[in-house]
Image (cartoon, rainbow, N blue to C red; front, side, top):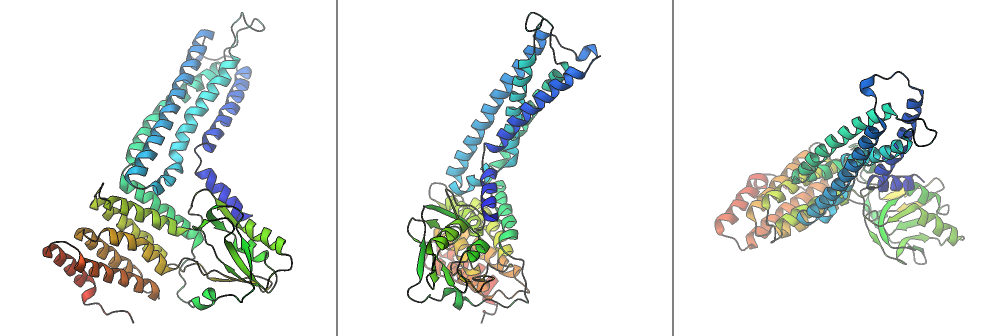
Length: 439
């Protein structure tokens, strides 16, 4: 249940509709409340009062202007999303949908438009209705305030939008989101805890294990491990064959259960309910997706059409920040146990070595003939390794050293001038030449 609530919350955060809709509802409520206040207020200062004609003019002007502002805001947002997708990576636009500032500005201008409509409906001249003029002066005053606030918010929105296209801002947003998600998905480091053996998690189940299969396709966004264990038979042993971040295809296995359950239909319902499948990949339990986004920006920068090593350096540096945090944490457990003796094997759980390879493999290959970028890679690999001081992270250190060795090997085979090749050699020797190798 908690996983489903988390999935719904994540969809709402990514929605450009939900927050403006709430402001529309707020505009209706505020308009009715202010009309009620106007009906109770007497003795208003003459400078704060309005005539029927001036009230209607103010309301229609503000309503028309805010509707135009809303169109500008939505157009600019779509333009930024398109530019970010083509210039950096289609993966980074997910964070732009979640930008709360943009949604609040849209909500303010649309909510102001709705408020004006509600108040405009109540304005009456002496020749209309009961023959008594109705001019809600306090509501009109608030309309002016909201109109000015909407104008200022649009100026702030354009300023925010211009700065949000800075690649460093985009990378920082992705980095912060990954680190925030890591607080929930990955435990804090506990050096005294014994390392978990991978053998049990990767062991094969006996023949005859029953398969539970996907009934729909999409990205696996979340796995509720507690609900999954609770839905398994007592004393059973189950291997989870999927993970958050994998694309699910119909009729492929979610898991295998041994011994086969007596009530197979009930187990299938419980397992499918515990595995949340959606239209897009998210960071809910998938910190590797954040690493993927940063690596994609670096790859896009190294593509022949863009060829921007400085942006690649920026992306690799942010990758180093993310890895320095994640590698200091303990990765998710690969063997889980239920209250009634159930054992859940999670062989596809993200490991430190997988994160390192995901971060650097493709970037390293794309940078084979870019000596400067290879030097950036060596510097970041060394910084990440240095950040692990005091912790037993042998698998992570081995993966980092392997990447550094591959950078050196690729440099020797690259079709570049000997002087450039020598630059990379010196960078490698400076960081790894005199350092004792790991046992």
